Image 1: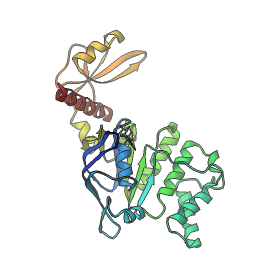
Image 2: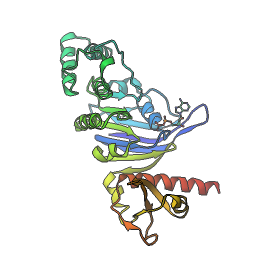
Image 3: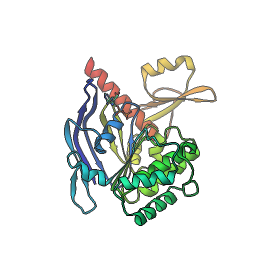
Image 4: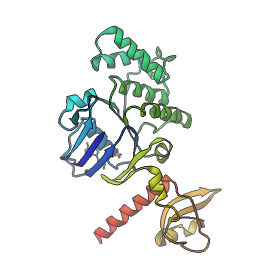
Length: 302
Ligand code: ADP
């Protein structure tokens, strides 16, 4: 439904933020996972028509089955797009209801009665109906993000882009927010950009891992996890020995369990005595891809 080919972007300061990005994004939740600086926002902003790419294409299937050239038909895209930016600011002294009305007018909903119906429906959908008269400055982080989703859904978008929406939410707010996204994702394509692995594990049927402007993996999380089976090993090691293990093996992660480091190592056979096989998860996949990319970069430099 959204097809991205050969997207490339270098900023004026020389940062190569998007490096030949190719992605097929179907309907439903699509997780775009990567560390800070990976290029996620650059990609999201390009798709949201807020900045241009140097090369490449992106085409979106519109509501009438027509193909929209995302990089050129900007006005058409904007009508079919909902966007929740990373730094979504709200006017703290305005109520949710009034601000959503205002956004609705900007989206072209000029007739009062249908606009009220849309605004009321959205406030109910994101569970802010009871709080609709409250000033946005009194909202919690989770409530503000849910308000952000309501404004993104104005005008029945085909594509919804949410950039790092769960950063700073507590676990309960995060759950509530992700459930809301999952409901939306039943009908449209939702791109969820995040550096939090669990956001993707919990709710994205398809995903991509990105770093340093490159797509390192794309597909279904479970397929990527299955591909690592029998290759992730765990061992509890003394803290002082960590650098040694990191030098000898591909250490994917280190976690403190009861104050002692437990490492996950990627290896096709048992690395040494004391290691035990573990069932890999998406975090192992994520770190394995990042390590592989770092190794290739080091080899290219050597
Ligand atoms: P992410 O969203 O994954 O954190 P970004 O797309 O924000 O990644 O950033 C990718 C890289 O591009 C980073 O190195 C960042 O510093 C750089 N960058 C982002 N926006 C700009 C800009 N407007 N001008 C110059 N460099 C930028």
